[in-house]
Length: 426
Image (cartoon, one colour):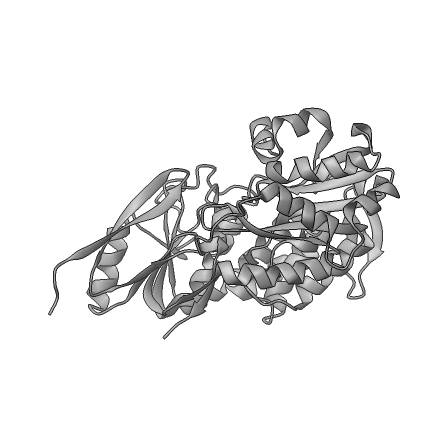
């Protein structure tokens, strides 16, 4: 017998914004997020210890003493890494090793994202660092420096500052990522500060190689990223592990590949969450909710959880609309055969369009398994990509639909989907 009681869940929709879902108690299978682990109590001390005793690498101080030009690659505003909390300890060591302000430059790893505003740069690295060091926004369509190719043939074309640098350090976070298994590590170089041909080559891999997927540690994409970044000169990483509130709960530092793999082991304990299969899955894109290009990262964890034939609803405010590569959205309404034919036609002449198509092909696993819907005001309700997406004006509208079809349907909420690695439960 149904109780009539409903569970009220606040679905993160944007910064300090929520949409309420009213789920019948008997249908509710849980609301999940990455773990709310306690943040590091002595963050500065933990950073200094990690930099002084790094994984498979000399200390940062020792590396800095033998380098003249130091490049710090920081992730951009689409990632939660509180780089401003890490830089003071990091740069202090560089200065203690004899490096001056002029010896240090900061490069924002934007990949193909839009340029950060000044306010976003301050929020990322702090006003002091922005004023003190030369800071550069990477342009993937701008000038690049070639370091040849990987053994699989991926072009290694990167920001020219990597040629200037004697010591390149990447600061970012480790989170699950469908296109290479896990973010962080060498991903700060490829695609972070790479040119369009390099970025396209790796973004074509997920649809070509089905073994590449969210949470898969060793795969072809990660191999390409690791090799390219090391050839281009990445020598040291500082990668954080963040809890559900974006706080640093752990970090690793050292040689890019060993430190990154050690970081994944730590990240799994925070971001790996056992979740039952469900007929309706709400996937909240927050904190990557700014536009469709960012928000669609929710597709991949939802694909792990939604039942075949079920309904997956991406929840995101998307104030910037479709964002970068807007045709990626429309491509979801085309068949894979049509997209592959078009990709082969444009990949040598229109890298931006080719990247949009490649990403659309990589996102299709969810669409094969379930119906996909969008709950977000940033796109007009008429935008459905030729029927590829259902559109809802409220969470309750989606709940009503699934319960009409299946009264005993199970409903799950993923509250920060892009930062979760779902593990199927019973």
